[in-house]
Length: 104
Image (cartoon, rainbow, N blue to C red):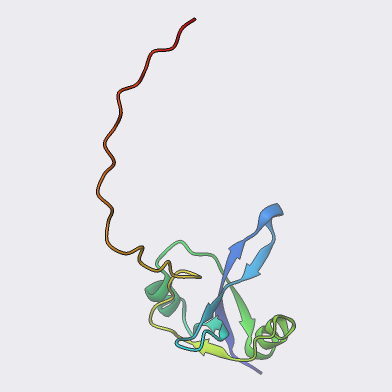
């Protein structure tokens, strides 16, 4: 019998659950995410995140239609889906023009 894993999920519209996936750097390949214990899941994702229990083969079967073949076991950190690149140096604030009162 396959060991049951802890699989992070998120709730979609209508209350359905969706598997949470990640990206491997630097090639950006999407991977499934699984944990061998609830403690490891909480350590990587923080508390209060929803999860389900699945056997490895069931997880791989659910990921296959999304084109995902690899599963990352016990990642130390799971960041945002798509990190936002820095915007560059901050712009100086624009001077505010006085507001003109309109006629009625």
